Length: 147
Image (cartoon, rainbow, N blue to C red):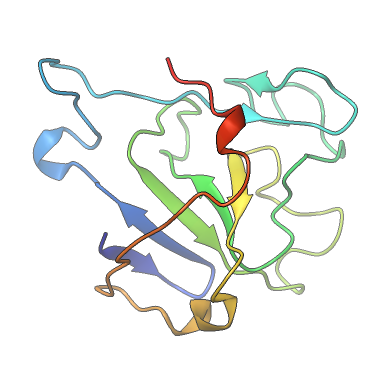
């Protein structure tokens, strides 16, 4: 996968689907497959779907996978369409000055689902046009629910 954005804040990759209406269209389908925003909160059994922390009135509640370290992985989406994620992900680059504890503007607004566990020392060296040759789920694959 080719890196499409690397700006010192996020590293974004995936299939932008420009030729396919900005997202993944499954074979035999005509519409872009979209993934709803999903945010898990500590102390809450079920995740929140399709609403940001602001819309749900949960500002300040701790999320299960916070944007608190380099390499937090999340679903990319259109800024003002919570359920527009399709086929792109981004890796977050943590800066304590930009994302102070308790005031992170990404927590609860983007669906984070994991962390990089190897090679983090190289994240800040990634540039647009670089290619990711492989990614692998190392923990939690047994909890993946397929549609």
